[in-house]
Image (cartoon, rainbow, N blue to C red):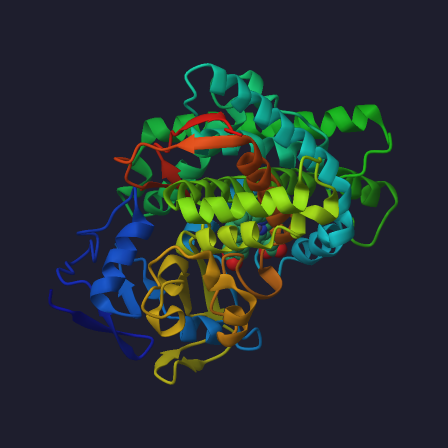
Length: 468
Ligand code: MNH
């Protein structure tokens, strides 16, 4: 395929052929699978390329070396790419969607960071165990029925319940429902629509696109706000009753006139942000990890042997979770191949040159396409595409350059929930390995659904009680 180039950032950057007036690079684009579609582009166009749908401009970075350079916080900062900025209609100035210079970002960051320290994780452990037990019960019941489970759906139930209960002492009662909680449906609908809103901002035709969808979006958004307000109100009605969670931190700061206190509207934005950011990505990570475990019997056996050796028959104590070093490497490796938050954007703080070659002016930004970065053969060698948890053996991690593995983003705006997610996911994987055997149809081919995050689609193995 011919490679075309264009002048942007004062530098020639490859772009797909067939660029046409007005529409730009829309030919060959995909609304339903933009990440996988861009990975395909990367294979043809190399480590840096651009796509210009309509008047938007996306420059993709796919190499480890450039990703490391972009991690220099003195030269680059988080940028809200159009897809993330569109989420502000739901998340406002909540942590994930706040602009760097919005005062509520620093206040909420200072206020909530202690809730994600290692010491705080300890206090969530019991709740995480409870929610995991609910999942195990649910799968026990499935195992005596036909055994079929929908991995992604059940992982999503689990992770939403975990953040609901640990963060806000609120239960969605997920395993008592057949269908997803309406919160999840409204969220998925709201997220999908907000992504299309970039198109709705196009001149003239834009606001006429998706009129039905806009009405549904308004309903979804109102519903999400009702749930959040209900979560907050049920707490305020209970008064200060010894809850020790994210919501309590925020409400207490307001009561006690803490310098980092945030107002009611920002609290609402944070609650919604945490309910959304705190579950989809972890659910996907768990689902991909289970997929690879089922497809790699040797890895499965090693992981299970570790759980047996470290946990035995006991309920794992807090400290025993991080001791599952191999299970953790399975997760790291799943998040390498399919980082469930697949991209983030970085902008130049001042005029600069990236990679000694791409001249960026202050404010110019690029997208780091993580699944491509994480498969850079310069960093990962010839087996970059192969699932192998030993990629994360300590000596191999030490031998690699820094800042080339970024599933949780980078710098000050990196994921606040990293420890939380890893503790939860390791605990759940360990528990499942110990309790169940899995049978995945050998004809199943990994398909990946893209919303904001990546998720395996149609992953429905049969589970049975572990053969002893
Ligand atoms: Mn999380 C930011 C990935 C789990 C809450 N998260 C980010 C970013 C990535 C990310 C990447 C940075 C995005 C950017 O630069 O624009 N997060 C993940 C992944 C998992 C995950 C892959 C699970 C696996 N995240 C969680 C959990 C929570 C959470 C769990 C909450 C309990 N994440 C956040 C918040 C931010 C964030 C809040 C925004 C932080 C900030 O900008 O201050």
